[in-house]
Length: 78
Picture 1: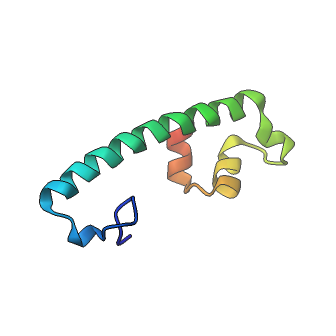
Picture 2: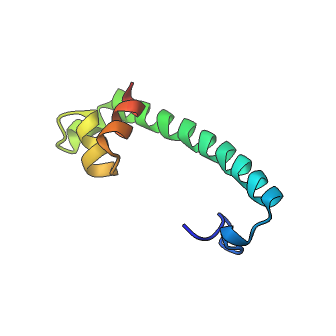
């Protein structure tokens, strides 16, 4: 990834201050997005939607359909 999240300034052109500010901002967005993802995963699990889509487990759904690695899927389930 060579551009910053706004795709206007290449990361390597950011000042040190801008880069450290940007990473803090992105981490906050990432935390919020992770929270939203976990809520959605929990609801999919509660409804057992993965069974309706012919997956035998939430883990299989997350790895095969959503595209998470095995480790990432397991961390989100735990």
